[in-house]
Length: 229
Image 1 (spheres, rainbow, N blue to C red):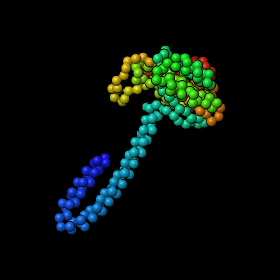
Image 2: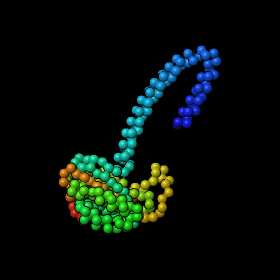
Image 3: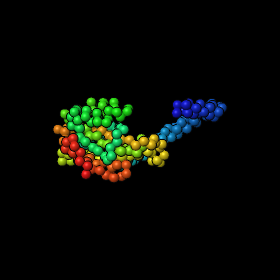
Image 4: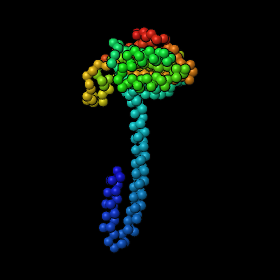
């Protein structure tokens, strides 16, 4: 843009010199500059229009974030959450969720097939190390993906009657046109959700995961054991 502005400035200077052969034209051009100010005001109005359009676009983006995109972090009534996506080689036969309530739970989970997750391993370990289990829990959500473009996306986190409610789905990860090339390799897709509470952390979880075929799986747990319903 700087280069374009410089060229425009040079062209403007050239036109001023041609339109001022007797030296009298610049005075007449000054009102023209005033018109330029009017144009600037016009641009100001344009800015208002752009701002209005921008607000509308922003509202659309917010709706899109809720309906289509993955939630990365947020706040709820009495809690906040952060999420981290990952892939791993040992994919489950059906979607799984669990509730990690302390460091021992986190260590056991990491060693149970997630410490060999390639480039994800250090990210997962760091995410867990940064968790204060005195005020937080971590929820791993996992399922099977048919290629390396698939991912687990978080749709909703809520607190209902002292039970943590989480909803997620497996997404193919492609763009709207569906043209993104993907390596054909069945893999596990997951997302860690760390939920931090204003009061004591919850001890019960209700999770809903929609797999890549669109089938909904309900999972509830009050301990380390999962009950798939």
